[in-house]
Image (cartoon, rainbow, N blue to C red; front, side):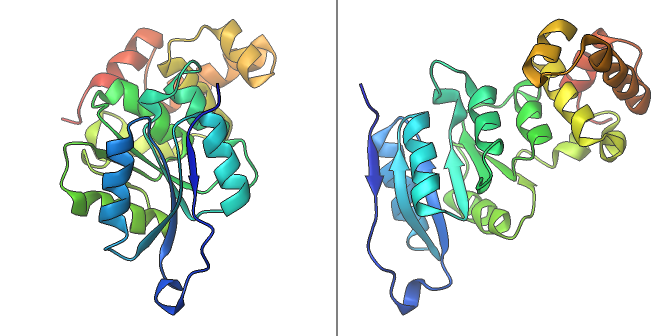
Length: 220
């Protein structure tokens, strides 16, 4: 059965010219209505809503939003990280803000590594979501559990990782084996091992067990 999609085809007037154009992905109608009400009073225009992944992809193709506000924890059956990764594989991917009840650093790290611009908890004040969306529209990364770089041991070394090394670290954080990472990224097992060794060296870690500890640990 198809998902629920709302598209706003109205032509924006002069007062909408500088508004951030937003699509919303959330399985809960009340949440979508609340986001729309808050954003449209604060220089943003919600141009579409969806409650499943295909509906979100269709909206992005048709509406070309500036920002997508998503709750990936509600993505079934593919899972939250795979859902966000599917967005970043699209040539027309908008900036992404995660608006979710996920709070674990370990669970949030993959989104950060993928390049998600912002995270806002669903129990945050509305102004934080508004700020995250406007920052995202300008390409700024804003995480309202504190900046991820500043929350973990070795965060200063994150910028040393290449894009492919970030991909590997993202999948390592999901506890995929080297063979599973190779299949996911369509690269050889030896290439995965090389990237893994490079990630460990750059983060000053010795093995996967230390990687998982590094993910979970706040910066001291």
